[in-house]
Length: 423
Image 1: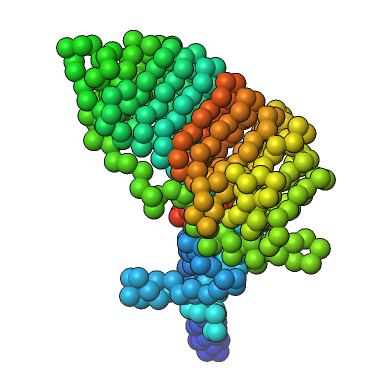
Image 2: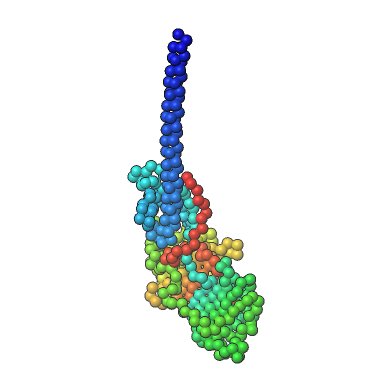
C-alpha cells in the first residue's frame, strides 16, 4: 500500500507541475503579446507625432507661400515614395505676423486611424524684405546730423553733408552702395562716422585713380579722408548691378489691393473710391486701407497698425498721395513707434509722393514712386524704397528693422517659434 501511495503522489505532483508550466507558458505568451502591442502602439504613436510635426512644417511653408486654406490635409511621406500617414492641419492667424498652427498626425491615415497625436505651435512669420535700410533709384542726399542704422543703396550718387553716423544693423552691416559710374558716386562733404565692430564697405561703379589718393573729382568715391572710425573698405569700379524696376517696390500691389477688398466691411470700410480727409484719429485695426483718390490727415495716428495705400492724389494735395501736412498730424511718439506701412503707388503713372510733417515715429515700410523728402524729426524703423530722388533732412533717424505690418508678395521670410507643445 505504501508503494501505491507514493506512486499516486508522484502522479499528482507531475500533473501540478505540468499545470504550473502551462500557466507560466500562457502568461509568457500573454506578456509577450502585450509587450508587442505596446511596442507597436509606441512606434505608431511616435510615427503619428512625427507626422504631426511634419504637418506643422507644411503649415509654415504654406503661410510663407501665401497659398494656404484652413483646414487642409497633407499626406506625409510621398516624397520618399512611401506614404506613412496623414496630417490634418489648421492655421489660425493671430495678427502681428503670428499664426497658431494645430496639426494632428494619423497612422496610417485619417479614415482608418489606429494612432493619432496632436501638436499646436504658435509661430511668427516675418516677411522677406530688402537688405538695406534705404534704397533709391535716384540720388540720396543725407544732411548733417542724420543717423542711419544699416545700409544705403542707390542707382545714382549718395552724398553725405557730414556729421553723420552709420551704425551696423542687426545683421551686422552698414555699407554704402551705388551702381552709378560717375565721379563722386559716393561723396562725403564732412566727417562720416562708422560705428560698429564689423568690416564695412563703400562700393561705387565710378572710376578710380589711385595716384590721386581717391580724393579727386575723377574718383568714384570722393573725399575718402572724411571717413572716421570703423574698418571701411572702399571699392571703386565695383561692378554693382543697378536696382531693377521690377525689384522696387518689393511687395505685390495686386495682392495688397485684394487684401483691402477682402477686409472691407460695414462699419469699418477699408476701400475708398472718393478722396478722404481725416479730422479725427484713424484706427486702422490692423487692416489695409486703400485710398483711390489720396488721403489727407489733419489728426495724429496713435495706437494703430496696418497699411495705408494711396493709388491716387487728394485735390488739396495734388503732389501727394498721402499727406500729413497739418501741424498736429503726427504718428506715434518716441516711446511708441506705430506699426504702419505708408505706400503711394499711383496707377496713372504720375510719380506722386508722401508729404511728411515732423514728429513721425513709424516702424514699417515706406514707398513712393517719385521723390521723397524726409523733414527733421522723422524716425523710421524698417525699410524705405524710393523710385526717384531721396532728400533726408537733419535730425532724421533711419533704422533697418522688421517692418511692423506684413506685406503680401514679399516671398518667404524668417520663422520664429513662440511655443510648440503636444496637446
